[in-house]
Length: 404
Image (cartoon, rainbow, N blue to C red; front, side):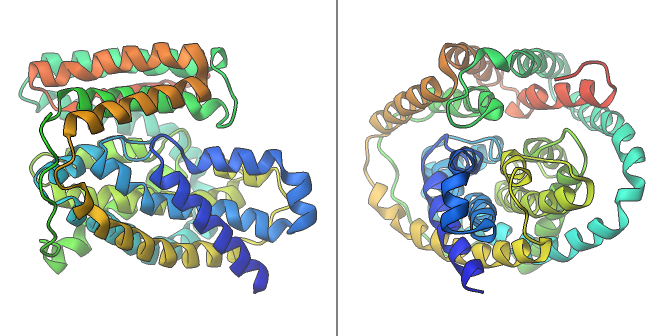
């Protein structure tokens, strides 16, 4: 029990740090811990080290709502959710947006843990069928979204061009530096350019509006409905190969609409983010498949039992909920801050971080992604179609048309 608590404590601290700092993911911290595994294993043991990695991942899924909301910078799991969250912040409801995200993650923890156990026992036998249908499912979903959009031509163009950019980024990721975050680091400039910097460049340049919290304006039935929907979406993409939470966000956007129902979308995507982390653990133990960088790092360690890591994840989720809500109360300190200065500061920080993590190749991807991310604003088309950067490579992968 002491090892479980120690691993949880270390992971919660690390996950809070990675969640607050824009552009830093729990995968990055897992890579750092893995590089120090010889010393850390002898000092703490495998349960503490593995538990710290998983607790950091769970904590990150809660706390990353803060930079997504107040700074408008996404990571690989909040690429679309940043749009309605940042919009609420600019209306003075940033604290509410963060609390909604934390609530969605907390609800997901309650639903995802038992569902992950069920998936662990029942789904491995059906895996070959799941692998084949991924591409068809994504084509159907995105095809429906494009056909029903107000500008099908622009929507199709954005989807295809962003898909080409995403394929190029992932196919030639070996050209980037792999200093801390590994090969998945290229997703940072790709998604930050499409959904982060491009948003900041077109955002309001005035002072930050006064932040006020007047409660979560959602009915209990709505919270239950969209938490369950997001959790199921997160579990689906977490179990199926090649998909990610970003893919779930794209599907949820077609079902909910992140512009018309912003609060529900934030709730659902946060639930998908957290449930994806829990189902990734089940997939690791059931299929020996690694769904994210933390799972890759765990596979290199002497693994504790799945039940031990699940307990650590639940404890981390409880702590992360309190931390996220507590940090959201500091939103009033942003009142009156110069929006132009804040946006420019964040952009400079992200560019520096991009250079450190991915080198010149990452900077090129960041520039291309930012340029493409400005197009939806110019032609008045939803930014969701830029998710082709993730979805197109997954479709190609699922049909064995190309290996990435």
